[in-house]
Length: 99
Image (cartoon, rainbow, N blue to C red):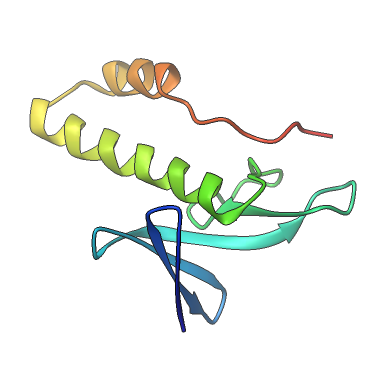
């Protein structure tokens, strides 16, 4: 089942949601709970022990879109890893508070 929300399209999958932007898949988000018990989402590619969490599918999808745009720009301009990190730091998405 596909759901449209905030300019993104979400497709329910076995583990989480596939995220599409302009009919192109940009990644996956996975539902989880914060230590406070509040429902949130993490990026499918974030496999750290304590991943960054986002409140709402749209906020998580915006983070995926930022990553997708940075990857595309880095490949196009042939950035060094340091330049990619600097640009990612400048464009970091808003996240929920860590508890």
